[in-house]
Image 1 (cartoon, rainbow, N blue to C red):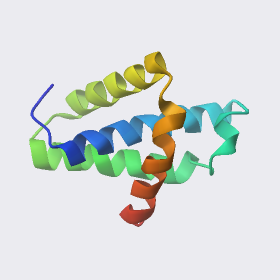
Image 2 (image 1 turned 30 degrees about the vertical axis):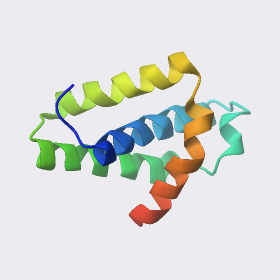
Image 3 (image 1 turned 135 degrees about the vertical axis):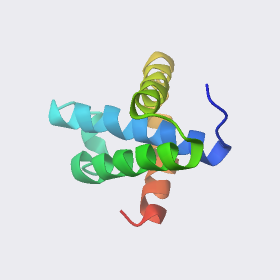
Image 4 (image 1 turned 120 degrees about the vertical axis):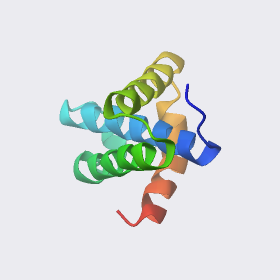
Length: 97
């Protein structure tokens, strides 16, 4: 993994969590539906985090996508998506999106 700050890693992890939950919401998953709708806001967060990583770390679009995909796979494998959502929603709120 490229050298990223804790703040950047957290943003990547939350972007991945939002993508997982938004996908679940679009499929009618009951657990995902317990969270606020993330289709639009989650997508915007994802885009902004991706742009931030390209600007601040100098990564290419594909590298950022690979980092987020790795975070999503880690969340999926560990079953931690539901646990990270409260803090990620706080991050979303403070982002102004």
